[in-house]
Amino acid sequence: MRIDILTLFPEMLEPALRIGILGRAIAKDILTVNLVNPRDFAHDRHRTVDDAPYGGGAGMVMTCPPVFEAVESLISKNSLEHVVLLSPRGRKLDQNLVREMAGWKDMVLLCARYEGMDERIAETLVTEEISIGDYVLSGGEAAALVLVEAVSRMAPGVVGNWESVDTDSFYHGILGYPQYTRPPVFRGKEVPRVLLEGNHEAIRKYRRREALRATWIRRPELLTNLSKEDLELLAEIGVHLPPSNKENLP
Ligand code: ADE
Image 1 (cartoon, helix red, strand yellow):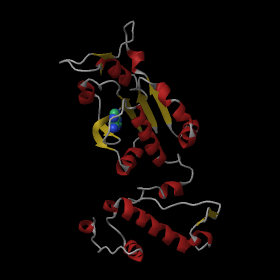
Image 2 (image 1 turned 120 degrees about the vertical axis):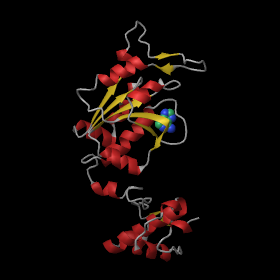
Image 3 (image 1 turned 135 degrees about the vertical axis):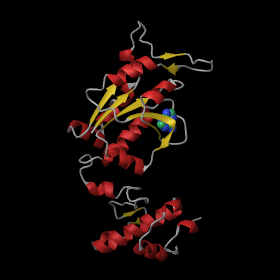
Image 4 (image 1 turned 90 degrees about the horizontal axis):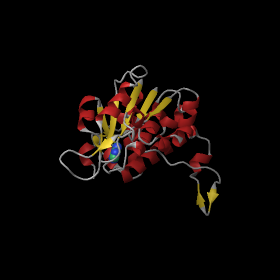
């Protein structure tokens, strides 16, 4: 997978792309992340990338020419099939969208700064606008990093052990189960006994039940399309949902 990121602040993203799972995937060439600065495509002496908004108002707006030229410079490397603008008005990112994007061969991510980009960029170049949540960041860079982390995690070969993706919160539509490690007792609090006893089927059931419990307590609206076993596990913790439970959630 290839991801090109257009940003006026590549130095904000560079260190994050060297760390952890993402850093390793890039080092191993499983993933290519290329940072492009639209300022390098500005032709005036001051390398201007912004201007005052028509109609007046606060702040500055990113101008069309350097952004268009920067994106067009990627044509030989990227199909430009997916040009994503990070923006609070976009489709909200969730694990379903992440999974869909993990199937893309390449994408260009546009990070806006100031009061945003000239609307003609969204109208002409952008194929999708994506928001990482209902709040406003000062720029798209942090959002682009969220997207790259989430999407690359689902791309083949990035996470060495697929089991750790398989047990992520949301991967199967519900929250993840709680994890424990040594010591077995810490300040009087014990690790659940079942995890120490080596009975794999009992551990599987315990984990599924605890994932369902966490979801019931924190995000009950996610509990849809449950299997017969899920309904039985919920009943064990005193939650009795009918087979079609959509209408019965608090
Ligand atoms: N840029 C500013 N706020 C944003 C958000 N919530 N999501 C994506 N990009 C943004």
